[in-house]
Amino acid sequence: MSDKVAVVTGGAGFLGSHLCDRLINENIKVICLDNLLTGRLENIEHLFGLENFQFVKLDVTNFIHVPSSVDYVLHFASPASPIDYLKLPIQTLKVGSLGTHKALGLAKDKKARFLLASTSEVYGDPMIHPQKEDYWGNVNPVGPRGVYDEAKRFAEAITMAYQRYHNLETRIVRIFNTYGPRMRLDDGRALPTFFSQALQGQDITVYGNGKQTRSFCFVSDLIDGIYKLLMSGEVLPVNIGNPEEITIEDFAKEVIQITNSKSRIIYKDLPIDDPQIRQPDISKAKTILNWSPKVSREEGLKITLDYFKTMIFLQ
Image 1 (cartoon, rainbow, N blue to C red):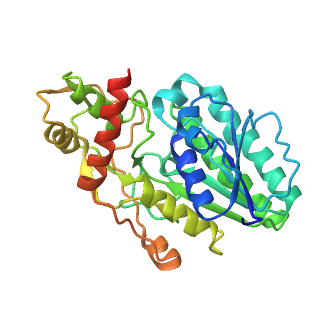
Image 2: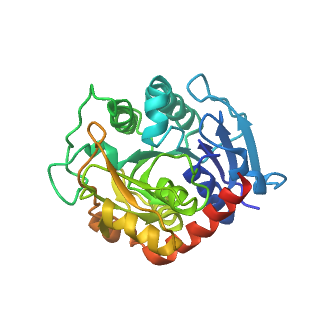
């Protein structure tokens, strides 16, 4: 067994749990920290009992103590969907600021490499298309979504400060819309909401006129990009996502088709500061990491549909 150790904050979440799987498959021991605010034990219970996996229920905004040596710290703790961070605004700001500070402190103390899970939301409602890493963004700091956007922008800033001031090895991944098994049906984002509504024969709710766009990346592709970034020498932020863009309205039609649902599409008012366009420029990831997504949306949606069917059956 490898003597490498990784600490994953938010490791019981959707992305964090898949990341734990990947690290263990790479023969790295994983210490998973999560306070289960939005994470779920079901996401990691298949890892319980493994010699190279440990779960600690912990709020990383208070303190992080790990007695063993640590080689990597991957900070994924945070509510990550609008329904969560609008319901938990203070916790979202705290985990992006205090939690990032504590995680960086652990990495500094252990002389470990640090990777921050940032987000495409740092670009806000972008004025350029597609979004490149050198774009500074168009964010409303006092709008309701600002609690997440600004928490992540601060997290990037303090990560770079630790890199420059303490010479800490740091990596920053800007994650674009990702989907796959272990997403919560009540996540609030378009994909799980549409699937949940279609599978239960309800009307599918599209906000605005449905012409706003998103780019959906399957979770295995995203985790592969994150792992490659962790093992790279790149310090500045890197976009990881699927550049294939689709309107929300067309996506709703796709979901109706794949689920053979009789659902109708209904339209409601667009939430405040909801981004109109979202598409990553992944030329940097292609060049530096030799990474690009491999799973087609058709293939990924089928896998995700099977998972959601199971979840609805269990409800």
